[in-house]
Length: 179
Image (cartoon, rainbow, N blue to C red; front, side, top):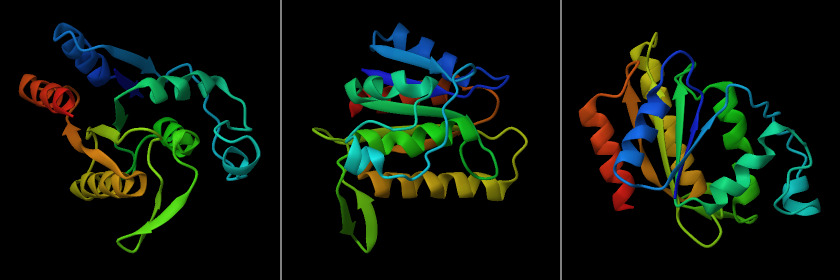
């Protein structure tokens, strides 16, 4: 199962990918964040120590995390915003700690979360580079790489420009199917 979580803006990159995966008979769920309010993580530690695996900050996004847990692959689609994900995607990502092993480790001199319980965290991001400068794109790619390290994940970041080319869509589909 693939879960696409998208902050599409005016472009439909996530929907294009979703339709491509469905056409290849890949079981896929598409979550559009347009009308979903995900409140920011307040770093209270509740999900780690008080209500293990459940965020103490209730919001519209509560339905997302069980879907991610059931997924084999997670794909974020986001406009590149100051070299990062959009605030909506960032808030979802911050709360992914809910589904990670609650222990932290030091690995290669980096503090890493324990990874997705029971499986390898397979994670892809598609950044929409519309209105970006080159430094923002590089920062986005570096951030994604760091996210892979922290989550002990495997995956890749892709950079799109308003739309997915057929070549990029097929490349992502093949990469997702191979993990």
